Image (cartoon, rainbow, N blue to C red):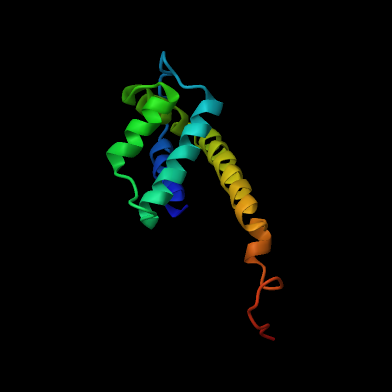
Length: 127
């Protein structure tokens, strides 16, 4: 999860300049791009946690390209285009975060707010 926000921050920083990126001819649809960013987030999490044997970066890349039937240049140019509009890119990552939170709730049975609340934890209350 930390990597997704780092990834977002890097692209937001890059996109803060005033240059306009030309729309690629083979632009990935916005909803499909959100799905791709979501899958990348999940796979990066598995990789960073060392779950089972984890994944290599090459395996992650190949999986994404094959699943969405895209090539690496299309992914890079589409990501660069979306990142050039910081507000829109932020909204895309908010959708990714919402999907991740929804998955987390399915697993834990709690929303992010409930998980962060000390009222619902076993932690002693400090007055």
